[in-house]
Image (tube, rainbow, N blue to C red):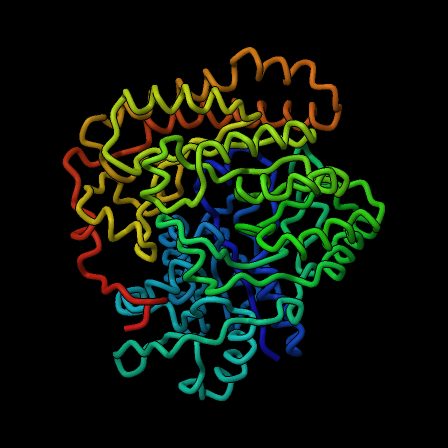
Length: 495
């Protein structure tokens, strides 16, 4: 009987390391559930990201099993890639007969060069993996896998990349392997027992900087009633209080979204729901926002990204400043927190642009803010738009949206960093924000605000330390198209 080990590698990103509250790796749990349901019983998850395990300790764990097959991947696909390669090389060194399978967004699009440059990786699963892995493992046992779709491997020194696997049509055909973890180990939102869940996959919108539409190909959703029952079971049987949606845009279809809201309300459970969505969906749903609140939603991260109409049009965001502002107003009216994002580096900006953006975001008056940096992933249309820009952060481990990647001609890295840090202080310490922190009438929301400030304070100081002592950047930089000059661009890595 095969011993199968799934590894969630340690991730150095600030989001993973600082809050000291961990959420389970949903993608790997889906893969695990699919493998178990295929008849394989000796399946184990090693969540090395949970305690930031050293490479040495990971290898010791692997040796103790030892596995016939190792599956490895991380939701922070690009920034975790160097660590994945390091782990795989050590495993191959001590267990050369172990088959290593690598999956995720980054390997899906970089399959050719990964296999070309690393003989420690045996297979790459491209795109959605639940059905592909069910077919791949028995095919490996029989040494007959060339007919499979959605994989890449090396044969006689040549990289073989097969056609894409079909998109999964019915998400309810695959389940999360919750038995692979102790749910009591995971928390969020202030030490509340928490998990990540997913109602839908994909996004119908075409924002240039995002590759969700191409990777998932189409927007699909779980059955609203079945999904609500799963959340209710996790609450009643496992004590889960907080559900963090992994969806890019769960509210895409108003009809089915309303069905979910009504279904979860009917379960009559006391839970906190946290999600991301678009501002135009919030405005569209003005008449049913009371259902959002009744269902348990406490916060939405709103992908506003920028506060300049021209920039929004350029990145094909599909919203307007009026819609973005109204969405925040509507959420506050229904006592739901709003987190607004601000992405720096979309264009060749100036300090004057940051001052304009600060005034704009203050006028929007969001409850929380998240400052990010534009990151030119090769699978996005944005990559083509900025291929002339210079890369000053060549370390992929820091391609996590929290580090500056591209230079800005009119603003030095120090000036940009200080602008971001000062803006964060102004936005979170302005009188309206502090008033909500101290006197918000809803106790649950007030507690959530306090938790966010606590986490934000720790992250803020860590980022300052990181910038001055651990964030080495190139002074001149390399044009993006030269940085990736040995790669060939193609859909999901097909060559």
